[in-house]
Every structure is written in structure tokens, then in C-alpha cells.
Image 1: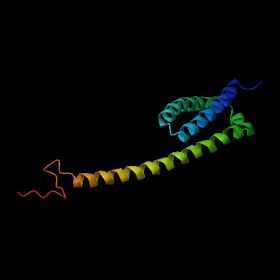
Image 2: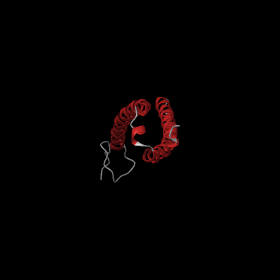
Image 3: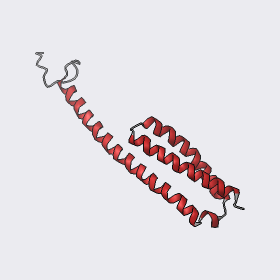
Image 4: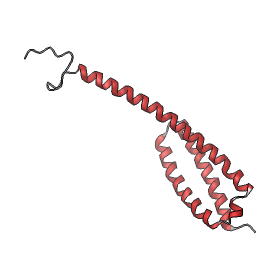
Length: 124
């Protein structure tokens, strides 16, 4: 009979993989609120995994079955991280562009007399 904690660990890893797939789907759909909610659930699963790893005998944790179970999770997680890094770069570029446009608009604005405007030709 298999160790009960080992069975729970395999189930937890299976759930983690499913959640990682959901994260990927939500990233593709650009639904970042859902990504955040799934990540919160993943945090709980990871905490459970960490507890179970301590209870499972080392030879079971290092078994070929466990390697085969965790490898796809690691691959998917790396893909998700890469997607988020690409998104981060894209968002930073857009933010930089928006800041530049805001500075340009501010330079041409003369709403506030205390701010210098390059089009402010008022005689003082």
C-alpha cells in the first residue's frame, strides 16, 4: 500500500499543474485579475506541497514517478514566467511612451501660470 502522504502529494502536484494551465489560459486572454486569483490558490497548494514533502519518505519523493509528475509543471511554470516577463517589458515600454506623451502635453499646456510653457507668450 502506498504512503497516504505520497498519494496526497501526487494529487497536490496534479492540482498545481491544472492551476498552472489556468494561469497560462488567463495570461493568453489578458485576464490578469483571474491570474491573480488563481495565483492565490496556487500559493495554498504550494504550501500544502511543502508540508507533504516533509512527511513523504525521501525515496518516494525522489522516485521516477515524482520526476515525471513534476517535470511538466516546471516546464509550464517557466513558460508562464517567460510570458509574464515579456508582458512586463511590453507594459514598461507602453508606460514609458505614455510618460513621454504626458510630459509633452504638459510642456504645451498653459493651465498653470507657475508652470513654464513653451507656448506661453504672455508679457509680464
